[in-house]
Image (cartoon, rainbow, N blue to C red; front, side, top):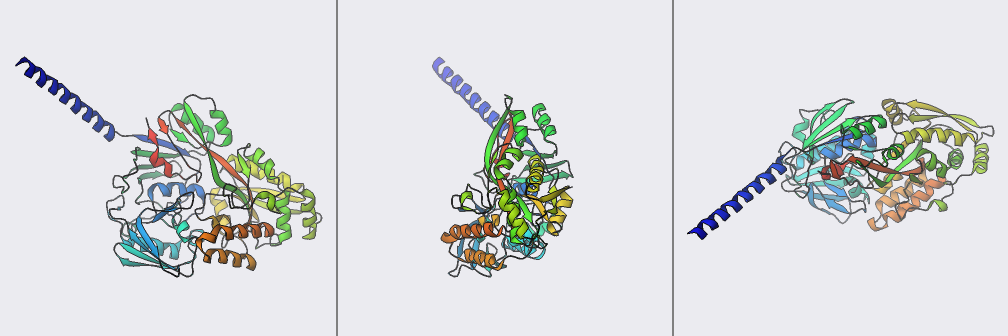
Length: 505
């Protein structure tokens, strides 16, 4: 009898412990876990067809998704589409939508939503966004679960553009939701987070999307707040005091955080390239010899040291991290040669030099400010006298989109389709040289396995023409976080999709 009582008592104790463990586990899984992130630049719009600015794209990819995603190695993986096929002519693609994919309001993703999303891109998208799908002729509904994309001609980069992690022009919106909401001011997608509120120039509040279809992603963050803090010094103070949990420090901010045991800083070797855009609609920028002189006047190694504090590498249009890209040593106008720059300047008709104006994006990043000053100093040595016109974001963007500039500093983010490191921007500079257009068309219409080899030839030609821009460096980047964050692993694309996988203490 006593042994029976003891066994019962023991079983009861084990049961109580199990119930307590379950209760704790449930409490932990249900608890609110917040993450506060700082960003430097406020988004220009929430509409994924209406901006060419990297910093604006960051918020889109937390809420919106596309049909597929292109990995860093170019592999296409399914997202809202579970499978796809193409015809023999490589001009028709049919996508089957994933069963169970829902928007954050619980409504299912159907073919009408896909057709609507691409129709609004075609009809109202910014030229930069539409240019990613220049070959697209139409998108039509096959049935509720499948859609057909018809291309005007074969496009070797089509799936890559469709799979950009930044979802520029490729984000799928709800047709029904968009009828009563303004996508420029609000977001509602299928991604790991959904929008709660936005205080202009201050903060964006998101929360975990409990209708998220991808159960393989363990989204630990229940509440994500993005605070817009243009001054890195303020971000550092906020990180140290616990007001924010994570920031993306500049090179100098990284040095200030070094040695702080409460803060972890991880480096990322990025594919972001800093460039000098050229408006070839205007003289003398329409003259290849003048553009060559500008490129030769730049000392890229000195720019990496001075503007990026050594945290980067000199780069042509295609970053050196792409093994197929032409080496800088094999390109004629990626070197520093003041004597040749002066000779070409004279050949272009300016033996006594010339005055030009730089449309500079002020307040975007300290490395860009330093780049502008170094550019001015270096070009002066060749006789090109640069006036820096410091413009805030809205003015700078307006000048860019209207081609109301001579030269302008810029930064290009990771491109799923490598052609976009090389592609001229419609409406933002003069017409393409015919020989370059022909080579680009050949690359796009060729076999996918020959694509990068053809793009390498495009890169060689663009170096010879110094068109459409002058690229100077690929920069490093960092993420810094407090001890509240156990793990945060961004990748070389510098996209913000990793925030859905942040592990919290």
